[in-house]
Amino acid sequence: MATNVTSATTATSDGGTAAGASSPALARTPATRTPAARAHASGGGGDLQELAKRHLWMHFTRMGAFAEHEVPVIVRGEGCYVYDQHGKRYLDGLSALYCVNIGHGRAELGEAAARQAGELGFYTNWSYAHPPSIELAARIAALAPGDLNRVFFVSGGSEAVESAWKLAKAYHAATGEPRRHKLISRQLAYHGTSMGALTATGLPPLREPFEPLTPGGHHVANTNSYRWQEDRDPLWAADAIEEAILFEGAHTVAAVILEPVQNGGGCFVPQDGYFQRVREICDRHGVLLISDEVICAWGRLGHMFGCERFDYQPDMVTTAKGITSAYAPMGAVITSDRVAEPFLHGMASFTHGFTFGGHPMACATAMANIDVLEREQLCQHVLDREGEFRAMLESLRDLPIVGDVRGAGYFHAIELVKDKETKETFNPDEAEVLLRGFLSGELYRRGLICRTDDRGDPIVQLSPPLIADREQFEEIEAILRPTLIEAWERIVRH
Image 1 (cartoon, rainbow, N blue to C red):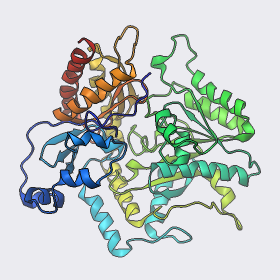
Image 2 (cartoon, rainbow, N blue to C red):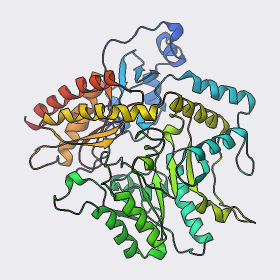
Image 3 (tube, rainbow, N blue to C red):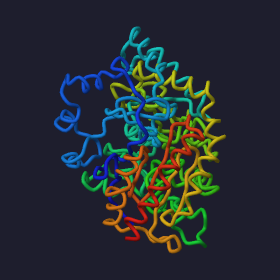
Image 4 (cartoon, rainbow, N blue to C red):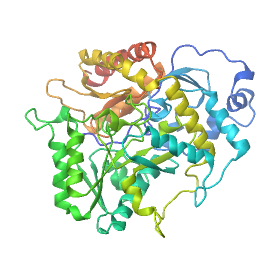
């Protein structure tokens, strides 16, 4: 199993997306360009490449890669497409890291934020409230399943996971079980990069540089049945959670955190009955169940919340990204009435928070985003079109390099193999050449932004905006198929 970090926008960087140049760009007059693009074209404000290489420290990126290569600079977005500083167009098959659910260029979200800025640009939710956070919390509670009626706002996904784990520990302490502090998650799962969220993350290459981490993490098997023995019990991975709880001591375990569809490793879906079994296990041992939906909420799986797709009721949901379609940074922990109850009386308090949690402009943006999701019925659109999207990806199984296709909704991955019959994977050196040495940069050059990743076995991952339709599916195949064929010929058969 390869363990290198994900490949990204160039053949030699690590941040997570692969992109490519495509058809001639749509012409734009100087008046329609962004300020950054105008500055670049006129020479004002310095060259964007020079400035980026000198001053910008990009996330999860091998910065040395850009000594010999351009930094991909995206200046404009429209629908399912983005444009770079040269005017070249790319199909955003990753929704800018699973974020831009309603597509690019939705001016109404910016207008909603601007209106809010004119009335109240910021006020804190520390002991105060303001209309945007109140109204958004009520709207989310109305949309969330079951008794998930309390909304604790944060600034992003890692903060949401961090907050949920702290809340789980605080809840157990408040209800007389202060020794419950441990968190169980799955191998290869990504839950964030802050120290607590990194403990939940099951990716050793991301964890090791920052150890020792927050104590209390325990990792169990994921649901990647492609790599299982054929006679294995389909719910063995769920039962592994109970084994871990018993091994750690149920009286020390605070919560289990799971994604509806696991991102790390490449869109692992649950087996039928998996989450129902996990819910039973958590209830039997008094453990809270956190559904990490930083990616899987807000239509990504065809429902407002991913737990609805697989029909289970969590005690908490963590969310971010699609809550605003990333037009503003925001996240939230949505909790059940039961979890919130100990903190609602007398002098009790959940002593935790972030300055910008529930920022009024972010709340206004989220409200406008949900308006679009509902008005355009984008959850239903995903359910109506996911079969066609999946069929396009399944059609690639005739290629010798394609071992598996998996996922749900608009969140899918293709696993790449050296041998389809034996499922032989690539070793780390081979994966480096395949993903960063060729696929990542070539997909970018051809006009497709997606993810090439080897945080498990090598995959290509696709997560297009929820507005994507047949035209975009056909364009993805037209780029992906010949690129994978060339990868096989150049990397495997050579």
